[in-house]
Image (cartoon, rainbow, N blue to C red):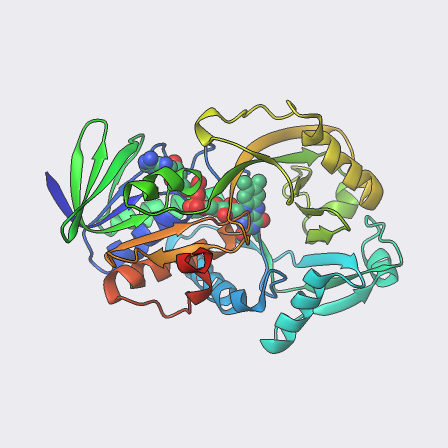
Length: 377
Ligand SMILES: Cc1cc2nc3c(=O)[nH]c(=O)nc-3n(C[C@H](O)[C@H](O)[C@H](O)COP(=O)(O)OP(=O)(O)OC[C@H]3O[C@@H](n4cnc5c(N)ncnc54)[C@H](O)[C@@H]3O)c2cc1C
């Protein structure tokens, strides 16, 4: 049985980044993925992801977001591939919106650039937005859009160039602790790891069960759709990425990049699923198109053109929608990164680096305490 210093199960957003940071430090690393990343079966496809720094989900995320942004810039340099567009990100909601309050407070706490705009100022600046008077908005000019497939591909190339081994189209079927090591089984072979990172996205729960861990994760079906839009209003050179908090829902979206149309998704809701039997046809639920079209008709009417395309993707939710990044309570040589709850991609670079530090140095430079598994016990 071949032995590696570290085995990574799941080489998607988090796992591929970790593989690069490990290999760069000269650690013998085996990455195993059930598909051929980047791919369309998990949580990282769909061309674009928003990166925000002033964080409505909690100001504790800000140092993590800033470190992630630095690492994305380093990855752009190392790979020579454009991975980020600084479109700015506009968050909008009613005057009493708790998310927007946290955006403002986290910007203040960390001295982040932020413009606070009335509804009228928003309408004057972006003629494509219909914002009611009881709303306001925060523009983060330094934030923007990441290109997830390109980023994972860049990490893959650089990890391989640094000596990592990647097995694609190879599903891990079981994990077993064996003294101070771990045995990782696939259909065809078994591998021995001195250390292990479990980063299998929507498939994490059963793998972690093999290691005696009960982790509260709910894979959830989500959709995204691209609509024909007036390019003079919604083109990426003039229109920001956006997050809208309504009374009972939250929508996010992207300007039309290279004429692709406005891409939009609904963040809340979705159907709890088994990722192996996920209904992957966009449009099989009326809400796949209906929810986002009705949002656009109300708030961005000139972006509610014909449906260009729709895709199905997976969120893996935790009960409090915060991540789980931790070491096994009894076996510190095992680390897991799970439950990114629909807002994890922006952090993938920093999660990869932190997972590498946890495995090799025993602790990460960023404070991960809010992501501990024990908060659910
Ligand atoms: C529609 C949509 C929009 C989103 N928008 C944003 C956004 O704007 N900003 C943001 O920050 N985040 C966003 N997210 C969330 C973000 O994309 C995810 O949090 C992130 O991609 C999760 O990364 P992951 O590594 O956990 O999963 P993945 O990237 O899916 O990686 C998991 C990998 O594990 C592999 N795997 C699974 N089981 C096995 C096995 N048994 N053996 C071997 N390999 C296995 C899979 O093949 C996969 O490659 C969005 C997500 C979706 C679905």
